[in-house]
Amino acid sequence: MEEIPNLLGCDMNYVTASVTMREYRSNEEAYTRITEGLRAEILEDGEMTDETILMLWLLRESSCLYDFFSKEELKRVAQRMTQLYQTNAMARAILAIDIHRAPEIAVKNFLRGKKEAFSTPIGTGVDFVFPFLERSQSIFIETEAWFENKEQRLQDVEARLAQYGHHYTVLRQGAVPLIRIDNVLYEAVPTAVQMKVPVQGMRLRKYPL
Image 1 (tube, rainbow, N blue to C red):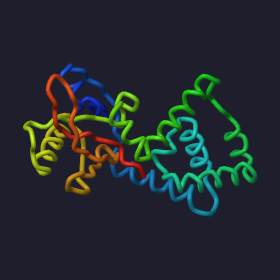
Image 2: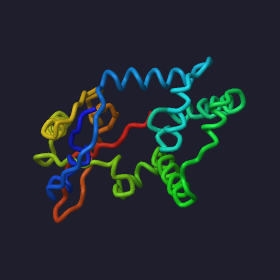
Image 3: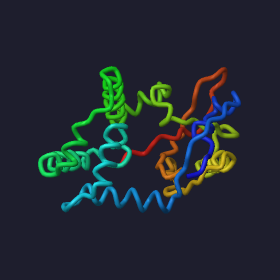
């Protein structure tokens, strides 16, 4: 693990306000190896190790399952959890534990529902109009000049990411590039925000599995 600037620090509002935020980044190779192994063990038939059962419980309790599994895959995850509860004594004990109080459960359910809503075309529009509803998934990077072409817009995004020390790989170019930033996939969508004058730029949006 290494400490790096939080990706939100690349947002125009944070840059202009000189706000700094920090987060941790895992080693990319280790992260990929661990997450892919975890996904395979959970989604495929067969025995599940105690470590994976504990990790599955932690992902559930932190509402992070959506970060690792698609909507269709979550149906399989639910089946596996049911099977574990019925056949595995440790899983039965750990999966029955809920570490949240009632208000926290309500917040978790709200965030889960909001995340589901934002995965729809209408929800995506809401996310763009009200980015404060999901700040971690809506990062606006302004471009240097108006009416730049798609290559120049992408260069401006790359320059900001490099400036703040983020590891990134452009997986898809074009009008809406797909970028892996610090182990997370984002689409860079051309957009504009209305300030005293319109500001053109790219909005980074988490790319759903």
